Image (tube, rainbow, N blue to C red; front, side, top):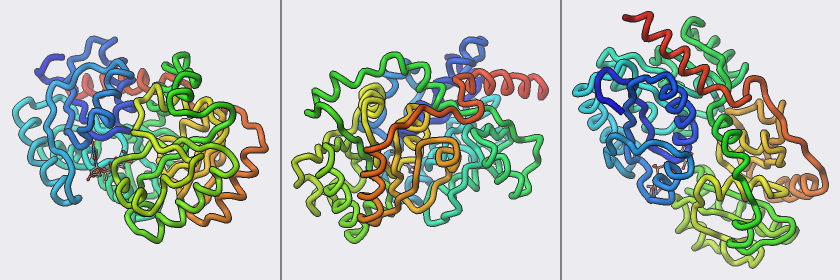
Length: 364
Ligand code: UD1
């Protein structure tokens, strides 16, 4: 990758990597100059490096090593470091992904340096401003020049916020590009054996502040997961956030609830693809299960991805154990088919690359 007037991609946290890989690939196929900036928001090997390997992503040109902290500290450090990067290398455009703190920090800094910003996965709204991601989404969309959108409802949200339609492009879903490209490599057998399940099993993930940052919420979900694990073994690759509290409250005291370390992309998606049921508070997994035809019970009361309910396998079950157990029982007795929301066809990255290069040519 060169450093001169390059397209700069900013990634920092685990869900960014699978969204960026298809755009980087498609721009590379068009011989575009690119620079990959890793903010270091996620830094454990299991949360970052292993994804670069699985996705075949190029090594970052730089890792800013920003690390963890309160929102103010982390976002502040991100902005200071990113400003230095952009000021010295003057990218032609900055591409940001998703809704993490690295996303909004990069968009703010680039815009103020008069560098155009493209936001991949624009327009998603949970309408829940207690979620840090919702604030990141609203702010990033308000100041980005190009808004690449995954679904029709997201286009409508941007319209309601008064955003000029000329900035919006409905292109599909780059995370699903990655899934479709790597799906032939998904093989549940070896990873199921490694984590110790055979026959039917479910997969769970848990990391949202609303679910793991208070004893009350955590206890309800632990109760629910234990009762679902009475029906079917559940594998739970546990995010570092909340681990201490969840373990202190007894999460790992059920022998059919198998707590494992965070998994690399291929191992995790292999497991999900072979599972009967997913319980999660993640955003991206709601989309991935839709395309794989695996029922998804979302442990939240809202979602920024309603297309996975209307055109997919997702349902919102909140954190009430009775609701969760009843929904799990039903899901385990039903059969689901893979679903493809409009334009989730594996070509979103190619559409973005082509539009981005047209846009840059138009500015010359
Ligand atoms: C971030 C995103 C969230 C996304 C999630 C995916 C924001 C506001 N949140 O949440 O939208 O769903 O990533 O994983 O950007 N930690 C480690 N090792 C790491 C990274 C984090 O141990 O490599 C621990 C630290 O204790 C840290 C905590 O996790 O304080 C939270 O990390 P942070 O990056 O602030 O947010 P996530 O909860 O990971």
